[in-house]
Picture 1: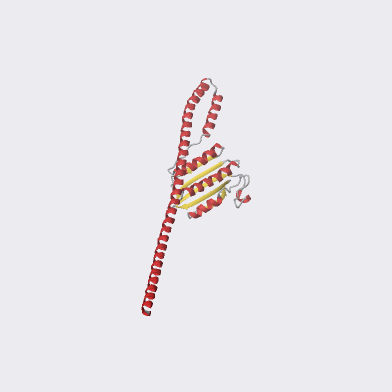
Picture 2 (picture 1 turned 30 degrees about the horizontal axis):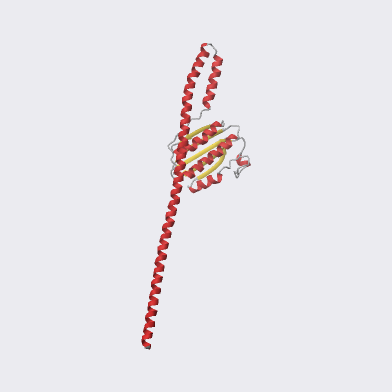
Length: 262
């Protein structure tokens, strides 16, 4: 009888141990499954975030394309009006010449030339984002009486994220426009070109007094007259893409020269 009880207890103990081992194995299996599911969920969430960012970028690009199309349409309408006006101007000039009013004709021609000088010419390169930024900023500068000289090559800057390129070029141009507005020269020079395996963004603006002497840290002034707009962001983006940023003054101009390996 005693032997039977011992055998029964032993069997129960073995069964309990077996059940415990099975439970632990099952728990580990569930933990592995949960870990795998969590990893999949994390990857899915990351993909969702990437998709949302890409969608936002696509929406932004689409909006910019629409704005650019509107700008081109407006410029086209201006050109049509200018062509129509030119016909009338020629008729008026012919009238003055026939009447012998040479001085009046000269004054009239000067007025036409001044009017033509105020018409902004749309800049087009293959990079649609650059098209938008350049024309948006420079047309605003032109309307504020700032003389603009631009030499821009058709570069893609495809190694940069759109949001970085937009912030980079937009901030540099904003700085230049603000500086030129507060100078007597009111001039902006824009050069974007490729040289020896590097993409170069060189933007300068006229100044009356040294900015680096009075504001060496390039902090934004309360009145907004400094060149501090987004300088930290410009530096961060330049560092992100292993570029070089040089800020200096030359020939009465404040210059930002940014170079990136392409």
